[in-house]
Image (tube, rainbow, N blue to C red; front, top):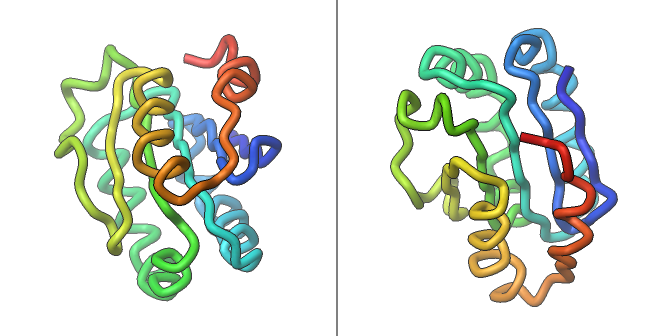
Length: 144
């Protein structure tokens, strides 16, 4: 089951159980719709339990209609999106390093620490958003 945590807002953390992702897509879309409706800037960190090219392609196909409908709100509110894929799967999944998604910076990483460094540099500092890295790291202790 996918878990979402907004306790470190303006960072949204989603811990994605790859085994149940297909079943969780409606709930994931509903949560994103909620966050976007707050009309506040935020960054997102997605942590996958496992990942492969097929899973990402299936997720993208299933959510493409929803993403297109939310494009304007995503551009207005999301300042960056980082994804963490476990080291064992990282090399198998196509990723392009840092690129843009609907005009927002996105990147894929093998570790949470590297993703948090990138988010701090690309999202929180430039947009002058509150970010307590130590608190985020403590809340993620034991994950991946």
